Amino acid sequence: MDAPQQQFTLDLSAGIYIKGIQLSENSFLATTNFGQLEAVMRDPRDLQPNARRSGYEAERLEEEAAIHELIQRALTGAKKSNVPKYAQYIRDLVVGHIVGVLPPTHTWSHDQLEVVSPPGGRDTYILLPQGQKLLAIDGETQVTGHFVVAGEEASPEIKTAHRKFPLAMVIHHGIPTNAARQFFHDLNILAVRPNTSLGLSMDTKDPLMKIVGDIETKVPFLTGAVDKQARQLPKRSKKKMTVQSLRQFVVNTKFGMAGVQYGSKPAPIDDQDIEELEKVARDWIELYLNTFAAAVVDRENCLAGSAPVLAAVGAIGKGILDADEWDRTRVMRDAIESLKAVDWSKGEHWAGVAGKFTAKGAFSVGGTKEVGYAVYNVLTDKSNPGFARVRSSVAVPQVSEVPQEVMS
Image (cartoon, rainbow, N blue to C red):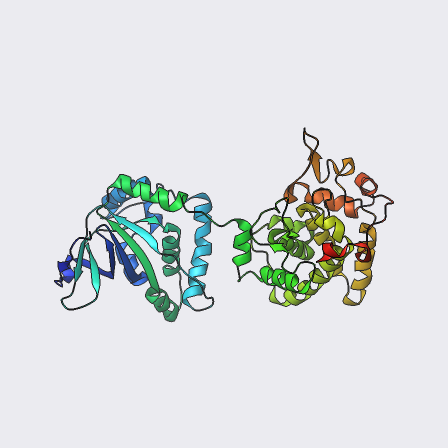
């Protein structure tokens, strides 16, 4: 049963009143903003092990830093590198450049805090006594991003927008340190993060994902056939390609094989490049998929639909994109004619290039970053020993020769 709330007595000298809803005896959902948050929390950078502390609060900071180390991980590595990105996201959000969302920050106080309500009113407040600070259990990167934005030189309008932007915060109080450590574990370890493919498919701000979506819609072979969750297609999947493979195809059409360095990270695409890139990538992948439809869908026996091959074929598209507009049809035709001689079946001719044979005799396809360049080289470089090895005189099935059920 929830603890009864105390009768409200306004005493501004007692501390800071934070408005919200009492969830339980030891948790409170607060509605706040950075103007208040910076008064009830430290800049997390001041609590790091290597932070310099001086002045009248040095001793208190040392004590808070010691406790912080028990319930949080240090602001290093990937966590530290994510702070500028989070700060940029906050900056764009508060000034209205993007539509976004900031998750609630989970904070902690060892002491049991007082929850009060005005008589006859619906508002509820939690009182943080003077001199006390809340520590972040979850969401510390966001908190750091807020302090970064607040410390920047900006117009008064931006400063005001940031300070007043509504934030949610869950305050856990009257909780021992060991329990707070367990909360950190539960919030960070038990949560199931979406995989990279699903994350990509949900990112509406990525201009490349707009191109990917347009290609899926406009290329009949791919409509409804792009898996947006799996990192690689399950053996019996009816889908024909993962969203990661399709996105990498588009990236490589723009950057060549150098595009594999971006992986799922944002790639620098200018707005003026989007329309042209979308058209070339769409025309090129449609021609490739229609030409090698049977081999693309036969993933068990062929490599034409594998991630490294698609990345390499996408990189071939860079030559089409870089060609003069009037000459692109010829360049595309020459590229597909060269690929028609390729034997896509898994076999010794691809061993050491696209993958290797396991001890049980199965062909294991390598990762895109691992073998993508090797695949690209044997598909494009006539001086490469593998160029002739992966090609044969066997005729490649054309669209008209592909069974109708393969194309549907």
